[in-house]
Amino acid sequence: MTADQPLSLWVVYDRPTDYPHGVIARRHAVPGGPTEDVVQGSHLDVLDWHFSRQGLHWWPRQPGDEPRIVGVWL
Image (cartoon, rainbow, N blue to C red; front, side, top):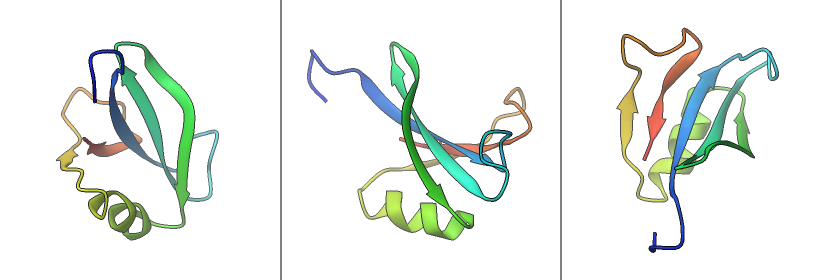
């Protein structure tokens, strides 16, 4: 990340309404909000493998998060 690039985080959702047959990670830019960038998987292990290999860190969902959020990769 540089001064001209926003921070990216990947919010993981379990069967959201727009992807009801699996899990997805949607990139959010800070500042900015949700983007069109999505990584799909059939189950959480697929996404965990993908993001952990990139050196990202996992944060589990927080009590105030919407119910379909599983956690965030930073």
